[in-house]
Length: 174
Image (cartoon, rainbow, N blue to C red; front, side):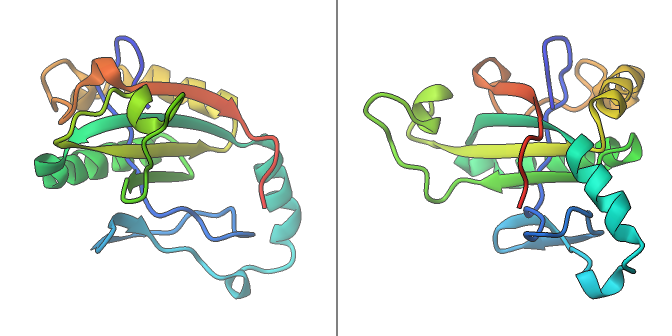
């Protein structure tokens, strides 16, 4: 996820299927934008169960919400794919970007209010799943040296000043 001093933004893919914490290879764009394919539980041996439980209890999430000009959806998808590949290169388990299509306006709080969405914009919700906080921190340090992360190399197709982001320790996953 992008943070202060980090011009890169998050890239999102289809959320992982319930009960399957392992990521899939990207299949490309579908009707809902970029998405990943999840391996079935039949593809794993039972010896993987212990490793998966450890991965689950230690995983860490970077999350981001922003407002993207609706007309720039294709540019955002390309941006997301590039950064998704970069995050995966540095250890991310999954990178997910969701294009808002059922994001209600609130009276007190809401995603649109939080990012000061304008009428010509769509809310995007993204996250990166890392195996641990330590892997995430090391990745962000390494990402600073990536050419794609240099200022001006890949401008965000949205107003980064209105983006909300943060890191989260996973406390429950079904």
